[in-house]
Amino acid sequence: MRCLSCGASFNIDQKLIVCPICGGLLEIINEFQDINKNSLKGRGVWRYKELIPGNYKKIVSLNEGNTPLINSKNYENLYLKFEGLNPTGSFKDRGMTVAISSAYSLGYKIVVAASTGNTAASASAYSARAGIKTLLFLPKGKVAKGKMFQSILHGAVIVEVDGSFDNAMSRVRKVFNEDKDIYPVNSFNPWRLEGQKTIAYEIYEDIGSPDFVIVPTGNAGNIYAIWKGFKELENLGIIDKMPKMIAVQAEGASPIADFINKNQNEMKFVENPETVATAIRIGKPVNYMRAIKAIKDSKGTALKVSDDEILYAQIYLAREEGIGVEPASASTMAAYKKLLDNGYIDKKDRVVLILTGHALKDPNIMVNTEIHSVSQDNIEILINKLKI
Image (cartoon, rainbow, N blue to C red; front, side, top):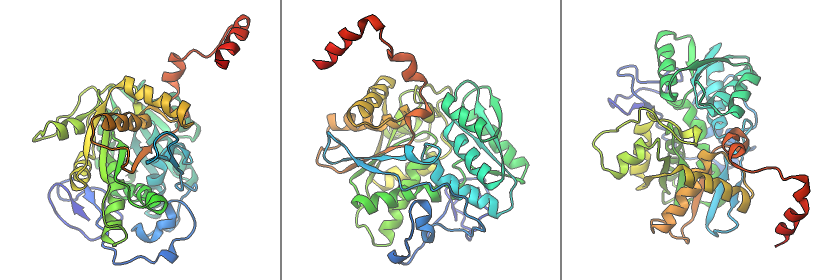
């Protein structure tokens, strides 16, 4: 394990969450020599148990992973990795199965998380299955109802915090620093990312190594985790080229995109992030150092898209591809079209969009903007229009 801030190295230790010297983010460096492909059995995240470090007395699983990679109907070389079909409806389940299995194996009785909604829902479900209690810090009034419902349903203790996700994260870090009997399951926990990297393994098994992978980027753990998965495949000699990792952010919450595109010397955080894409409404991404490493190492890039572009992309995916995703997921489709238009990506390039969450996670925007009912007297007129 190596600290991204001070460079200190430590032997693999499941109890380590942050650097014990400076408090920085830790990387888990897996120096695999080889992998026996015949040992890959079953489906989902734990199919790759041999590539997930740590000792687990019990694996807490809801059969997460094994999500479909759907070939676009309209773009021959575009593939849609639909993470919304995980058990709680988002990619967070991949990391949470590892994090909660770790917490259980280490004897923790309580886990804590800050969340814009998806982490909260996932932590609540997996903790419930493990018989562990969940403490959540959520930004008041800024969590989509579908996600809040899941957390309540699974029995989490919820504390609503004034301000943004970043204020909620500050509360988690305070609890973690002051009470070592409570286990944090946000993505500054490197063990969680060991589950999320399996997205890369599944993509490889389906289509090999693509040219580009576009990832919605809020707290920025997932783009690093997917890069890490491909990097491990490269180190094992299984692939001979890395896909370029592309981070997409909303215009109102784009510190990483601004850092990359403006060649800033240091990250400038967004104090009051705002976007319809609630899952990436984060102004101070805790994993920004990990994300920058993934982008630069893979020779990728970052960009931002507007809320209007996100909503148009959400409608496109639903009505042209038949895939219902929450707004944050749709940001990848908006980014793909923008990158085609400016020539950064060609239609011949093999591209994977990570669709991180299901449409039912965040129905508020669409429910409030779309017209859903027609007067009974106008049914005949409506049918005639549909026939045109």
